[in-house]
Image (cartoon, rainbow, N blue to C red):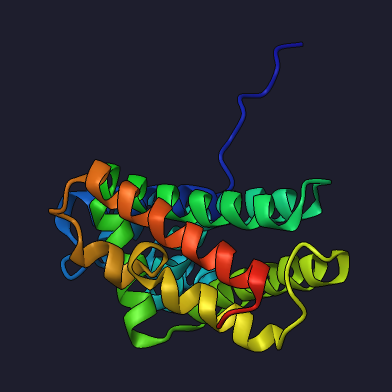
Amino acid sequence: MAKMPHLEPPDRRILQIAAAHIRKFGLRRTTVVAIADEAGMSHANVYRYFPSKQTLLEAVTEDWLKPLEAGIRQISDGPDPAYDKLERIAGALQSAYREKLESDPDIFNVFSEASETGSSLARKHRNRLQAEIQRIIEEGMASGVFAQADHRKAVALVFDALHRFIHPNAVRLDADAPRGQLEIRFERMLGLVVSALTFGRF
């Protein structure tokens, strides 16, 4: 008996078409009606899977954030010292955001606008990142790698000091800055952050 061809689930098909439309037409000119038409369904059927255009756009963005978040959790779960985990997570964020901005700017701009408007997607992503950073800092303090201090202030230090490199809006503003130059500045600032955490000087 011949095998049935693999069919893409409708929600995945809709996400793929939505991403293609964002890249082709831009965020403003992307419409649910056009996406539905290409998917061969009514726009009402699209709304069965995604209640609004905003929900659909956030789902497209979440599609590339999930693997990044999974990678960060994997780093956190590893046996490495806290300072090494912190450096690797910050480096993963900086690299992933910059790479997405350069290779897929239209989708990155959806993420940047979500961060600017404080959408649920952006808040959840940031909360997950903060939770992992806090977890690593507390681990470092418990093991003696980092000086004992207020962990909330320590988390704030990381995000404040690295804002230019790990906040999507700041990354977008630096779109024309040479990548190599930014990476040098990032490494320098990250070194200062680790040093401050190590000696408790913040």
